[in-house]
Image (cartoon, rainbow, N blue to C red):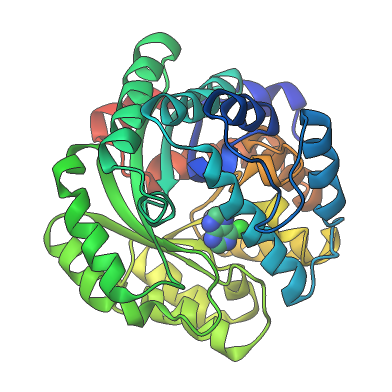
Length: 349
Ligand code: ES4
Ligand code: ZN
């Protein structure tokens, strides 16, 4: 198996991480104190009065590997994820959130990243776009200058909200388009196929944005979810797929992904909530051996036992028995399927 030191040292590109999912409990406590916000783990849950209480509450909902196999536990994940947004109000909070990610990234030799953000989770609480985007922008600039970490943003729509809300947010974000490289789709995918958002994605495509979509997030081994992967890839409806691990079980999908040359962003730690090491290793191996350009990423480190990109790469290496050469291929894949400018790509690996 590949060397630990190589996995740490290799220059990295991260393409699948939700900035709100990097809100560590330490930072959340700090922001809550600073803003005088009430702290809860889930809506209507008991008020938490210390960092210890917050840590204990998070531990109590954190499913063990392979255990989050029912909808209820999945719903608790989303509830706690969105409750975390409450800590974010002012420009300085968004700055601190992004800078905290960039510092972790720099320590793991991430050189370039594309960060998802969920504007609807902020505007719905009355946070002005400028507080959010100006905080992100300043952190992005400082990370480039101080930490040598470059970045771009991918604005995601929450698929459980309406297509009209997505379109409104799309238009409202246009003043910030110089920061935004792509448009994504996340949150709970039950009965919310990407086709519902066809209009806003078509508009974004015309305006020159790259497109990506979460599919098969919940690892439901049902036809509907496989169709979601297919519909995202068909006709090159997306430039990348986020997750989509079910493609491993469907040769026609593998062929389609290869033919359309669509990259995949995988987040192995996330899947441990739904599957076993052995099954996960086999599926990732199948996609990798088929020649699909897949990259390894962290998703929501603060909600996944503090597993960042390095831990996800070590996990992938372990369950797939990746060699040093494979680690280099994975790192190169991430550069290739990223939406960085060619001049930035050339400086990474
Ligand atoms: C997410 Cl794990 C997961 N699934 C879907 N949407 C998300 N947004 C943040 N984390
Ligand atoms: Zn995700």
